[in-house]
Structures are given as C-alpha cells and as structure tokens.
Amino acid sequence: MSSRTSDSSVTSTFTMKKSSLQSDDLRDRTEELKQSLVIWRNILLPLNKLLEWENKYDPFIIFGIITFIFIFILQANPPVLTLVSCVILAFVLIDLLVPIGIRMLFKNEHWTSVKDAKYTRLCERIANFEQHIKQLCESALKMRKERPLMYLMLGAILLSFIAFCGQRVDNLLLSYLTTLLICLIPGIRNRQLIPFIRQQIVDFWNNKKSTTSPIQNVSILNITPSISSVKASTVVRSSSNQPTYTLYSTTSHGNNKTKAQ
Image (cartoon, rainbow, N blue to C red):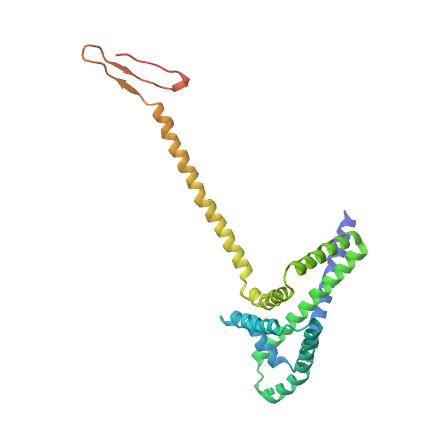
C-alpha cells in the first residue's frame, strides 16, 4: 500500500514539474515572439481582428478575398512551378518591403497598453499553437518508435485518403476549400459556433423525439375504445307479442353471462 502511494506521489510530482516546465517554455517563447514580431504588430492586430470576426461582416470579407485570389489563379491558369515561384516571390517582397512601409506609417507614440495586451495575447496563442504542433510531432515519433505497425497503418490510411481526394477532386478547388477553412477556423472558435451547432442538433433531436411520442399515445388511446366497444351491452327488443330479452355481455374473469328478463 505504501509503495503504491509513493508511486502515485512521484507521478503527480513529475506531472507538476512537466506542466511547470511547459508553462515556462510557453512564457519564454511568447517573449521571443513579441521581440521578433515587434515590427509586424501593427499589421498583425488588424489581421487578427479580421480572422476572429470581431465585426459581423468579417467572414464575408475573408470569403471575398480568398475567392478573388483563387478566381485570378483560375483565369491565369499558370503552371505549378510558376505558381510556386510567384507565391515565394510575393512572400519575399512582403518580408522586405512591408516593414519599411510600417515604419513610415505607424509611430510608436500611437501604441497603447490595450494594443500591447492584445498583442501579448496573440503571441501567446501563436506560441501555444507551436507547442501543440511540437507535441503532435513528438507523439508521432513516439508511435513510430514504440508501435511501428500502428504508425504504418494510420499513415497509410491518411495518405491514401489524401491521394484519393486529390485524384477525384480538382486540386485548385481542394486548395480553395482548405484555405477557406483554415482562415475561417479562428472566427469559428472565437464565436464558439461548434458548441452552438452541436446544441442545436441535440435540441432538434430531443424535440423530434418529444413530438413523435404523443402520436404513439394517441394511437394507443384510439385502439382502447374499439376494444371496449366490443364489450358493451346489447339490448334486443322483440315484437309486442313476444317477451323482451335484455342481454348483458360481460367479460369479467373471462366468463360470458346472459340475463333474461
């Protein structure tokens, strides 16, 4: 008994130390991101505001921008190598020219504490996302080392599904849907639409069950009078020259009794 208690205490201590180390790493990574992205902070905050749907028309703006870009690619119809080269060239130009324009347009005097708090929270989210990706890669490598058969099966199924989708669906349409979904995920999470949709489905299912149950009760009630009507009494009257007989048909204790008057 004492050995189990000591093992549980050691496990809990190890878990607490691991969580504290992860929180320290997260804090350090957040500070690193704040220092490295300080030039882009005036661009990242409006972009984050757009992605999190702080205004009601933000999803339509995201949908319009992504749709316009992919319609332009569809009309130009460039080769794959040309498209990849243009995308990399656009990222290089943005990385070199946009900071120069930011220094000219935005001054440090306009930076407030409210903006700094939002910028810190954004850096924390980026660091948390990086940590989740790192843990996912570590778990995949751990599965490859400890359970190679499971690693092979999951990898083969996932990659086969991706290859099947790429073969059956147009690649540009698939890229458009993937990009649109990725850009809409922050707003969906911020507005908590997934729990809302789940609750609406549950409420609809419960209402459907509650509306179907009274119908069954009504059908049972409609059957009951038909059975009782069979058990009703019948009065037979003869002509004036003959005696009158009143017949009582009862079903008590499974017996049929007849009374003549």
